[in-house]
Image (cartoon, rainbow, N blue to C red; front, side, top):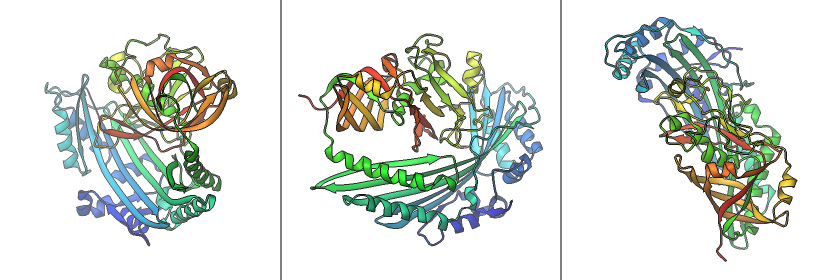
Length: 516
């Protein structure tokens, strides 16, 4: 079935029976007739995308010719239309909502490793050519090269969905929040407050390059977040849990609804009996799943090629050298079905892929965009990503995780006389160059005489990414991908990512707890 729904109708439909705020770029107010056509995806053809952005192959060629007119080596055009919806429930009532529509094109010109970039929120021939002239100023030779006529490059689809979000009304979403709210309060009498957020978005992108490639993608995303506050004997604790996926409303199965409730409540109530461990250096076990945030931050960023090209990263001289034990392999993967950080194609029109960063303990690759891959003389890894059409792409992670190892979780726990089991990480700070980090562990447990014993909370762990990598002495076979709504920030840009880990034993890390 195929139909068109105007963006104005979409916003009206999305805010039915609710307090809502619709945020619309200023240019749309004067361009309603030409800008508010939203085709249903994902079964759109290249012709549908041309119609969607009201461009054609000739106009794209003309804009790129302008962009290259001052002697640039290469240019690309990044078209994006994003629709984002937010619904919030607090104090047992759905009382917050907003919808955002964003539309524009970014134009990039490269001259060597220098970038000229400009964007416009008006997708008209005049506005695009003006932006192209601005981006072209990175070069000044006056000897332009002609772009190659674009041909569609087909890409796989790692996130097929049953129902595009444009077909889901607000009335279909609200019952999920109300059901979750009721289940949270029913699950434990100590719960005194719940806050629930439901978001969904659709992003239509089209990327054209002066080398003759054009790609299109429809990128869905959804998230549900539950924050819970409980009280016991005058003590209050708060914790949360969330799930995110590149899926439609079919993601919210009864099993996932029950899981987000149970996890949020359990994580909160466990804090009542949690204390703090002794401070000092000790063995640390990273729990399977969301502990991968340490891998992402302390190690993954150091493997992004721009940091290495500029010799900022401590890994800049480690290619083909051993950085970990032979049973340690780390990948950054954009092809995991429906996972938050997956992409069918990167924002430079390169195919997504599974990239081995560390293979059998050897550092094999960085994460490359177009600039770094040319510098190193390798192929791009499909890692050129940007927050929106307002930004130039840069090397970024997608789904970063460690592969399963030869041990078991039980074997790892039994091997420890006294240590920390780190489970729920909330935030941290990392110095990319040196790799030094501090992470905050919301909830974990002590390991004593080979057994997990007392829960502990509010702990800092301090270390160095490359040293931790070298000090991984056991890796279990129980890999888990975190399904949380992870968002990675870099140089003022944020992109969705995911991460994962099997249970991992680190021989020594500094734990900040109580001095005794």
